[in-house]
Length: 355
Image 1 (cartoon, helix red, strand yellow):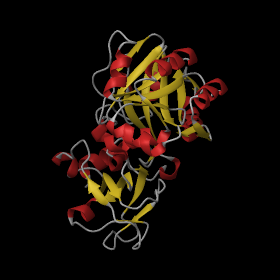
Image 2 (spheres, one colour):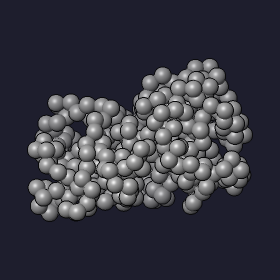
Image 3 (cartoon, one colour):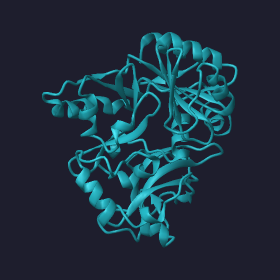
């Protein structure tokens, strides 16, 4: 995090730890505001990887799960980077700004991503760099804050993944319970926007933004879950993060075979537990009827829920839910999971295909 921006946030009341805004003094109220009102959030806990050069499009097209040709000035996309075995190494948002591609991902995964991608550059005219200090990034959610953001641009993105630019800002519309956007820009532009929104939106910590992603059913792949899932397990194909028509990329054969020839045995669900202990990403789930040796599933991300308990995204063995089996955190003594509806459906054709 840039020292100038860090000082600005601390002056506004932020409590920081390891480059992450934990809260602005009232974490429970901030999470409640995320689901019920208007918030603005520093997104420095997400890093940025920049890709530029004459061969950037061709290079990226051969690496990721989505069709990079669809990314342009007005459109971003979720995508994944896979191991040769088809396991997710990263889930990120890809967008363009100033003739370069940017990959937004958890900050801890930027350096591993750089190291992996550099192995494939070879003779391509491509430059890769950690761009975490080149653009500030904030999140805006809520009808009033979003309406104020509209005044900064000639037009605003209306649907998820759409992008607009203006006044030094890049605005990306996200799915969520309210109008929501990621905003990128230089320090002067972002500071000015933060101050303009201050009378409408409540400053909030990173947990509030993660809670919105959880309720939107958007998977954030944290370090504990690297190589734990294939894309279909975290519903990446249901949030426009996978193209099955783009052609070859690393791990593509595994993903295609699972999609068209397999049976989807695990997928991601929204769940709640009544206890207040927040399970870490990667925490194993337990069910006495789960497949031997593989466990019932694992936590993708979890955050405290307004009103008590914890909301989470979890990858779970499909048959357990079909049979109404009880699934718990950790072991037989753990908190039971109460499953809730995601904002998108599992189509019949998806239920019968995958991994």
